[in-house]
Image (cartoon, rainbow, N blue to C red; front, side):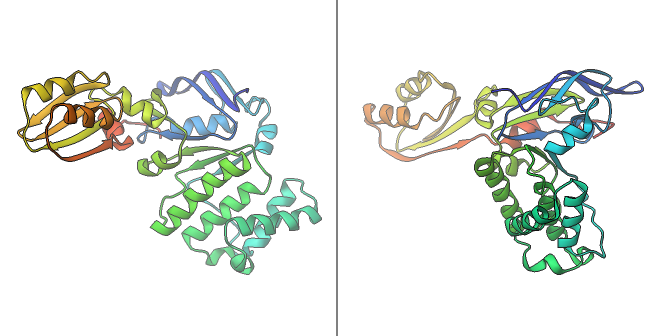
Amino acid sequence: MAPLVETSSLTKHYGSIKAVDGLNLKMNPGEVYGFLGPNGSGKSTTILMLLGMTEPTSGTVSVAGHDPTRDPTAVKRQVGYLPEAVGFYPDLTGRRNLLYTAELNGISKSDAEHKVEEVLHMVQLEEAGHRPAGQYSRGMRQRLGLADVLLKEPKLVILDDPTLGLDPAGIQWLLGLIEEMAKQKGIAVFLSSHQLHEVQRICDRVGIMSRGKMVLEGTVSDLTAAQESGGYEVYLEVEKSSKSLIGALSEIKSVKNVNANKTKITISGTEDCRHQVSTIVFEQKVRMLELRTSNRSLEEIYLRYFQEPADGEG
């Protein structure tokens, strides 16, 4: 399967500043890809190059089989973009705004009316479609923006901090819609966000940018497992600990560190090893009081990489 998005040594200079520095990125059809990094890391410039809105200094980029710099119109036919700030004609109703977008995209009037009703239903704005867009709340504008993006049935949707300013219910609804877009409609989603817990929930893979470079990439579980202290921590409490028990736990293949504080033991490693732990506790004839695990969060990994904010472009 050919990648939907592919960049090779993609670089963008603004004077002496390297906003993006040798980016190699691949994204597959139907994938939800989380694109992370602090302000100044190169996320915004990367999106502009994917959309053909700025030209790379060097390197190559392909989106849906097209070069965005040479053929931006072909890319825009297959890519939907929802910026951080969504704009509509405030005096037109939500429905009329969408019909105007359909006309700009060359969709026939008969098809447009059907598609507009379909996307209004998807984003749960059927009843509000007759109201002027200027009366919409932030959450409703985000919904209308997604409807606008989905009108042309894109292969790829690029979302720039789409949950910013939404209430908890709105965030959960939006995340659910992103999952539906990817799993049921096969639409790939490129999600640039600062909300790490949301990214961790819905993304198939994530890439973390720092000062223009991709510093980490992979699934969340891969990234957590790759950390020096281990991706998983198993918490064990026993009635009575012993050197024999600690030694046996340390011999588990995936375990990197065992830290014991009297009867409470923390086991760090690359896998969830509760099964091996419980077997060892049984063999050692020790009474177990508690056994639980936690996977290192994406936020922990992120904060570990960014002790100081980056400067420059976002």
